Image (tube, rainbow, N blue to C red; front, side):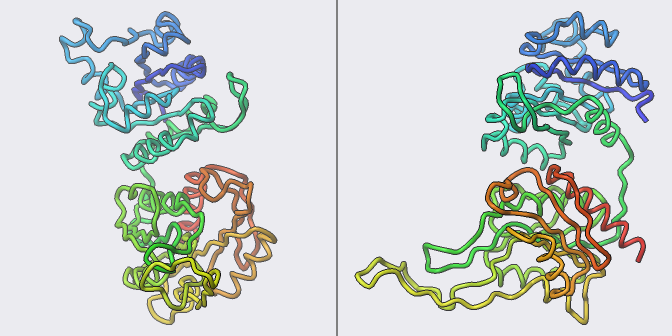
Length: 401
C-alpha cells in the first residue's frame, strides 16, 4: 500500500523523536519515499546526520534558507508529499497547527499544505490532559487532521498516564489508513446521532444536568460522516466544535432534543449517545429562587420524554437500525440487557460511568455491545476508535439487512 508513496515527516522536539528514526526505516522497507523536516527542538534529540542518513535526502530545517526558498521550498515540500506526518507531535506543534501559526519551517509547511496531515502526539501526561491541549486536539480533528495515539504508560519524566507516542507499527497502520481510498459503506444513508447532556431548568439561573462531555457522540457523528453518511447531529450543551461535514443542531432540554430528533426523520440509522435527563422540574420558577427561613425549596419532578423508546417503537418512519447507549454505575451488562428489551431498540452500547472509570469527560471508553443475540465486550480504547468500530459494525448490520 505504501509503495511509491511520498511521506513528509515532521520531527518535533521530544524524547520520542528517537522513534522517528525507526519509522523512517520501516516506511522505506514498505517502499515509501521519506523526506524530513527537523525542528530546532528536534535537533536536541536526533541529529540531522542520523535523519539524513536514513532518508537519503537533505534534512530540511530552516525557513529562511536562501537556496530552498528561492524555489519556494516550504510550498514545494508541503505539496509534493502524499501525506504529512508529525511524529512526535509536541504540545507546541499542535498549538501552532490549531491556531495557524507559521514562524518556522515545520509550521509554515503544515499551514501551506493541501494534503492530509496525521499527527502522533507525544508529551507529558499533564500537558496532554491540559484543557488547552484538548481544545487544540478537537480543533485539529475538526479541521480534518488524523490522530494516532497517544498511548498510556511510563514516561521519561517518571510519570505514568496518557502521552506516550504510539509505537511505530501503530503509526504505520494509521499512515496506511490515511492513504487508503476512503471506504464509504454508509453512502446514501441518513444517520441521526444525539450527543452530550441535556439541561433542565429549575429557574432562570439553575439547571439539572450531568457530566457528559459529548466526546463519544461527536466522535460517532464524525465517523459516520467519514463512512459516507449524511449525518444530523443533535447535541446538548458541550464545549466541542461541530464535526466537519455534519449538520449540527444545538439544543438545551430533553424536550428540545426530542423535537429535533423527530424533525430530522426519516433516517436509516439513529444512534442515541446523549445522556438525556430522565426528569425535569414540574414548574420552572419565573425568577431566581432565593434562600429563605423556610429552608431549601421542595421541587416536584415529572418524567421527560423517552427519546430512545419513542423512536424505537414508532410504527412509521422508524429507522432501520436504532442504537441506544446505557451509562451505568453497576451491573452494567444486566442493566443494558433489560434496557434493550424495555426500549425496543436493536443494539445497546453499554459503558461503566462510575466514579474513577474516567469515562464521563475522558478520551477513552470500555463498551459492551448488547443485542438480542448476546454481548460483545471491547477492550478499553479511545473514543474515536470506539466510534470507528461501532460505525463499521453498524454498516455490516445494515448491509446484512
